[in-house]
Image (cartoon, rainbow, N blue to C red; front, side, top):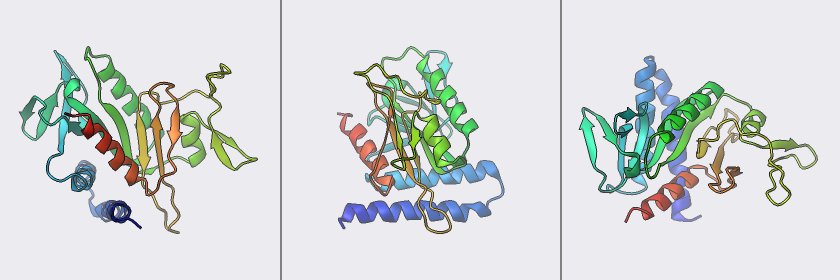
Amino acid sequence: MSNFTEFYDYTENLVWAQYTVSNIINHELTKGEVREEFVIDAIQKGFGNTINLKRGFLQVGDDQSNQMDILLLKRNAHVMNIGNQTIVHPDNCLMVLEVKGNATGTDMKEYNDKIAKVKAMEADSYPLFGLFCYKIKLTEKTIMNRFGFNYDGSTNSYLDEFNLANHISGSPIDYPNIDFIISIETDEADESKQVYMRRNEITGRYIRSADFPVMKNLYLLTRSLLMTDN
């Protein structure tokens, strides 16, 4: 086992343990903010002190987004800091991450709509939009169906029937603005309910990663985005 794999496993288990412990917090807003801090800290530890993670808003002219949980900014991003919130132009943001303790279909729809509002702004470029879930309050079949996959009983797997060459459009996607989704849940029997799916920028379809632990995918994606910030 490589040192990095050990780090991915350790960090994922730590973040999950922190989530479980945070259930003692009764105030929901405080609990949500604490869990966002867990995710920020986990990402930060994978990249030292040079990574630029903030909370705040995206803004173009007078158009401002809803509040965003985590913003991965470019190294020299020009920002407006107001209290503990940061306002930044979409061009200066590499990734937006929404954090949910136990995500519902409503949460996904609301985030999808929030992203649509940002993409309606007149910016030259937009960040990747991800959804980090500790748990998802949906069955695996429902999750996969809503991201364009159908269950194949003969192979006991999920397939995307999209085929560009044969002009097959595939099943509709409910949340097409979400670029990736990750869930780190492990249940009481220590069985993984984890998922990481990333949208293909060309086809608009989703690919489910077979790399575990799933936190590895978040680190590798973050690294690839940081490498574009020269």
